[in-house]
Amino acid sequence: MQRTGNLKLIQELNRSIILKTIRHYGPISRSEIAKRNKISPTTVTAAVRKLLQQGLVREASVGASSGGRKPILIQFSPESRFIIGVAIANSSIKIAEMNLEAKSRKQKVFPIYNLTGELLIDYFLKSIGQFLEEYSDLTKCIGISIVSPGIIDVDKGIIYENTKLKLKDIPLKEMVEKKFKLKTWLENDANAIALAEKQFGAYKKFKNLVYITIGDGLGAG
Image 1 (cartoon, one colour):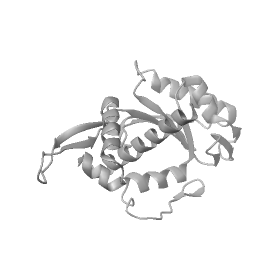
Image 2: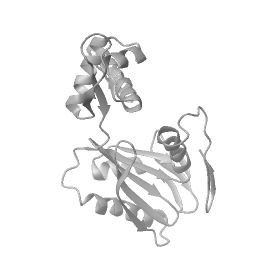
Image 3: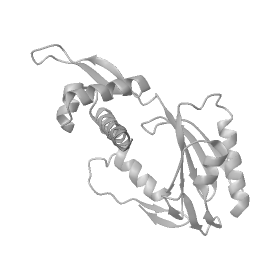
Image 4: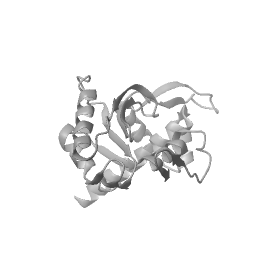
């Protein structure tokens, strides 16, 4: 049983590595994926087959031959899934539908109207509910990603303190998952912006990055 569990974990890790390679370097052949990651061609073929079944990648075109059969190139499919992004600010709650390359496809802004504390959390949950009402099917939704200023425990999904909005010890991740039955992540806003710039922005080639936010308060990530 333990061996089966370990094998499944290894397969999932390999698929994650291979998907990341396709996203960064695609269109790319299976053999090139194997070379870049030092993974056996058999493992790559099995992982790509699973990713194709899931719709996360697609066969894009035929590559140049190096002597044998022309390779079929694999490309990432960012429109195959989507994520709901929620940004809590001091004056508004912004909610957006984003593809897997973090490109916004639809968004709405909900003014906060000076709400704080429990009233704000209640309004926050209602705003997400209103946004999700437009979806008849959420099977392709990976989950809900929330960013907020303040002191955040990422692992537990808790806002420990946000003095401006009078939020303290709010288990926001648990509350959202319980209400909407979607996997949820919570991160500090400055850290999230820094990660997005590193992953998708103009600074992805740099090893280190510091992002500073200046508004009603000062933050860094």
